[in-house]
Length: 201
Image (cartoon, rainbow, N blue to C red; front, side, top):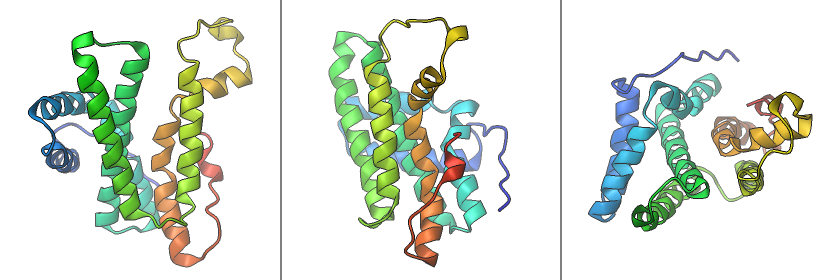
């Protein structure tokens, strides 16, 4: 399996614009206040570094031979997840005014619904994908719960456990990785989806 990853994707890249259009079409049914907040949120995660993260499922999907439609759906799922997690981090870090807190909570709820709805349309209930997602979300919730606690040691003295817990803050991003692999496994056999190459992500 050969995997080519671009260094970045600019906001003007057609692939980025296509995902942005799908996202905007999905949230247009919300109230105007939530739509405006949703557009602002998307702009926050549309820098080249963020769009690089958007497209992890695209490179994996290409490597596993998925159809363009399946790949695009997985990328959109990833964007819903990234926007949801971004808002949850804002809430946990208390990085908002009281006036915008309700909008943030409601928008996060809507994005979580879109995220899960997209996955439900992509994966059957018995797919091994769901156990992957459940584990990654449990890691993220555990790490987020303790994220505002003051560090007990300096970064230079971090143990392996400290680094693992730090990495768990990004666990939802790993949910984009099993999708293409599970599609390939489900097409070929009913065996479980083994993912040793995901661990370092």
